[in-house]
Amino acid sequence: MIIRSLELENYRNYESLHLNFDDHINVFYGDNAQGKTNALEAMFLCATTKSHRGSKDREMIRFGAEESHIKLIVEKQGVPCRIDMHLKKNRSKGVAVNGIPIHKVTELFGILNVIFFSPEDLGIIKNSPAERRRFIDLELCQLDKVYTHNLINYNKVVSQRNKLLKEIDYRKDLLDTLEIWDMQMVRYARPVIERRQEFVKELGRIMAEIHGSITGSREKIRLEYAPNVDASVIERKLAGERARDLKAKVSLTGPHRDDLLFFINDIDVRQFGSQGQQRTAALSLKLAEIELVKKRIREKPVLLLDDVLSELDSGRQERLLESVGDIQTMITCTGLDDFVAHCFHIDKSFHIESGRQID
Ligand SMILES: Nc1ncnc2c1ncn2[C@@H]1O[C@H](COP(=O)(O)OP(=O)(O)OP(=O)(O)O)[C@@H](O)[C@H]1O
Image 1: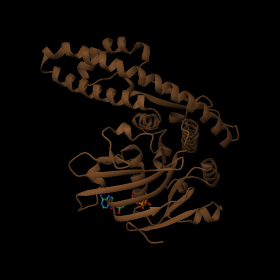
Image 2 (image 1 turned 60 degrees about the horizontal axis):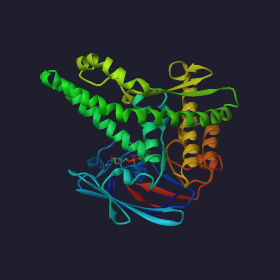
Image 3 (image 1 turned 30 degrees about the vertical axis):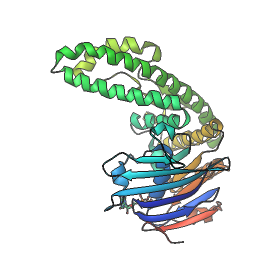
Image 4 (image 1 turned 180 degrees about the vertical axis):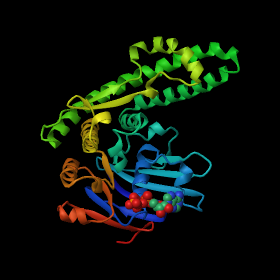
């Protein structure tokens, strides 16, 4: 899978941009706040319909403009495919594939698979559980449409149930309807938990191998899925915890409260690991993700590396670039010094300044 070209119109700080890419290493360089990450964000958006920064559509429209357009040409097994995205201020975005509008976001998943790696990912181990869940979900949603369907429905049910828990506080007659939402919650939670379990097991196996090689077998890493509740007992636990949910006016049981745990030589890295260990574990996780996606989809994903090289020492930089292999990669950085110093290969470079490509 290759991104052939990107066109932007009134997107973030770009009034207009048209870039054609190389099949392998593409580097965006320039000073801070010039628009390098914005370009990567647009590609991520076309793959997932969401900003990697969690921005709303209206925030991505260029200041002063009403609408924004992104056109991405992707090539899959030699066949070109056009993704058009149209961001609007007060309405939901319009998306078309090869000129045909799509109605559900799930129709877009799988057309373009991307892996995004930014310095924030290096903090995934010590950050909140929500980020670790987001990591699992982003990956699984790109790989598995059934998972996406179950997760979307699960999240809808949780939000409806939370609304109801608040209403019951002043309308006791609604208490009976809680049962219906519990049944719906169980229905979608079970496959979500089971799929996450399977995914983390596979990812953990790959991660252990990678981490062993990065640390010269000095460290043994173990990735563990920590479900808030087991799929087999969720029904019972929901009923048992009902009084607690009513008191808190929010659903306290379910996979929306899952977590991922990391152990190095059987010690919890989040609690006791050094900063270096946490960052290396995060790098192993990301490299494992690349391997897993390469294995899973017949096409290779596109790798988006946002300013991540500057955060890694030269050994880790090398390990990361080695694992890129022959997959198309978009790298942002402030300058090309690291590439020159370590003789890292560049196939095409784009110098970005104030939302324009200057050479
Ligand atoms: N909706 C918008 N309209 C116009 N400009 C915007 C919009 N949103 C963000 N910007 C501008 O985009 C610029 C930031 O771009 P970006 O995050 O891509 O920087 P960068 O080149 O990756 O920098 P760094 O190296 O610091 O990460 C800022 O100047 C910001 O003001």
